[in-house]
Length: 325
Image 1 (cartoon, rainbow, N blue to C red):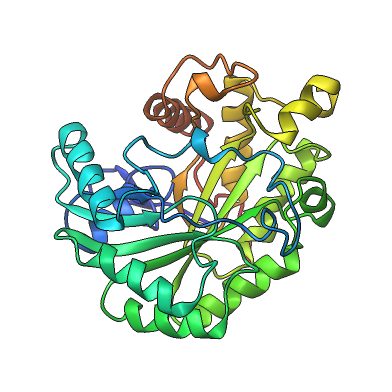
Image 2 (tube, one colour):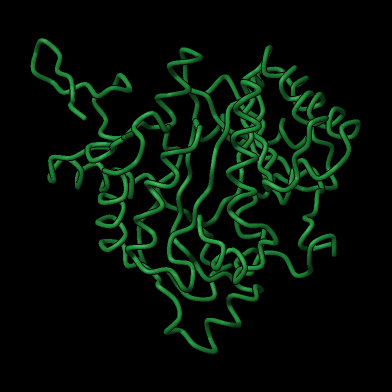
């Protein structure tokens, strides 16, 4: 894959910017003409691997408190949560005037269509909200839900973000996901066939996966009809089965140091489909929730800057080694 150049010699990549990966903020700005901010929602859902439908205990790595903003309280109406979130983000990012309501906590299609319509409609009624991002599992989508989301996608920015976590069945079984990779592939294909945007989330460093296994996922993902991807490094969070397993035998786990992770991500991103919008390259958990301190010492904004610097130094970019043959 070759880069393009402007008349002044500055590189412009196929996604239309000089950034060396297809970055989410630029993607949204290209659609809406201005900065767009996600605002998280906790709508009080659970998961089928928590309530006994497919299992108990939830995913081995998961403690939702570790990534849900303080304004997201399931006791509050959806509209009030979004209004509080907008207030928070306006203080932090004053340029944002448009928002995507991000149904984030647990499995946000794990209900009947009637109740989902009520929740989603309430979110879309908030002034400034231009769409929905719906985080869910690939085994919690059906034709009725897709019918409704297809209808909404004709009027709003709608994306269904599927928690893949891994492309390997042995890993998914080990972390108690309760579904295999075939379910992830099928859900993305069915969703995209309806013209609904799709996203995938992957965790790097899950037990049992080598670095070669992790890198290979770039090729596996690149074959799917995805619009966005999110990546994060494994972090050991308090109150999870994985925390207990870690302290029993830390040797089973790969916890990346910052420089290691950035080098890994450079190798990964070179193989990734350049049409994929990269929403996140690393995750951030509040230190009070970490059972094992991360000690990276920098925030996500700095990590992205460091990543882009590494890409430039290596003379590489997203999809440089991608092949669709």
